[in-house]
Image 1 (cartoon, rainbow, N blue to C red):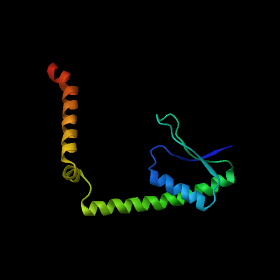
Image 2: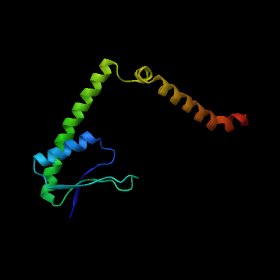
Image 3: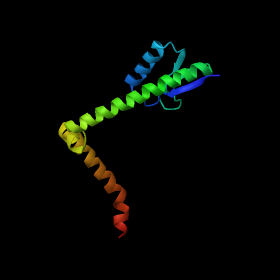
Image 4: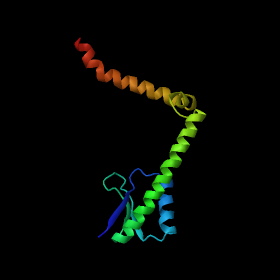
Length: 119
């Protein structure tokens, strides 16, 4: 019976490539199903037998712990460099930022207009 190891929906390409390389390096006999374009099927990495699933899960757990730590360190470094937050987004893409604010204001205004007219 197949064992599902990991869902591929919303997984970045670099992470999926790393996992493929990890499985190839450790000679895990896996197969992959791609996620559907419309989000109906989840896609993922699969193995056929229980022993292979346990070995692959141990490799995945170790990889994901290392990736989590690396992503946290990268985020903290970006925070220290001032590359996060609204001000950074505004400085990088002022037109996009202002367009988003205007769109939010219009949607909020249209949503609240019936209630404002009641009073």
